[in-house]
Image (tube, rainbow, N blue to C red; front, top):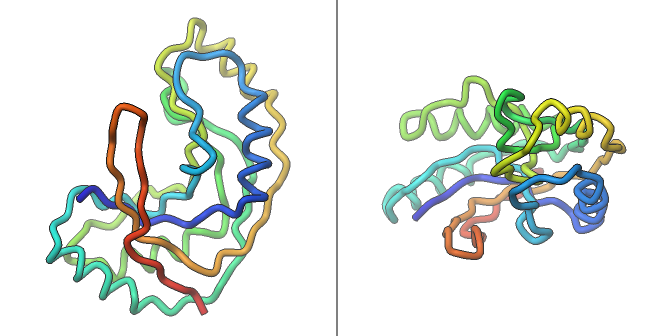
Length: 173
């Protein structure tokens, strides 16, 4: 089973993200669908049922306080060859580090973790520099929302794209 850990995004924040996506310059690729918007904290990959039970047990031991996440800007991975357009969220690092800590020994720590929300996957752009210039003009208002839980998710890839299912929910205090 292909798995990852994520923070759910409230509906009102997703609505604002849709407004951001509509401002994108033209590109060949795929906008992340409304129902698939989430903040990935850790990608675990393929795990069997035994490891899944251990992950759930360890994640349930996290006793962190609720917090506010805040979208602060738009960016891309690798400006030379844009493949992912994302929103950067601040205030999520402590939870991600705690997840790394409790999963130590079964999954490696994320050394260069950057909390982000993938909002588009780019296949092709005719002119990279012009595309990046237009992306810089996309208006991103600061969006703040409360985080009171995180999920363990499964991901199944099919012809229509990824399908996600919650397989574990963990509350913050």
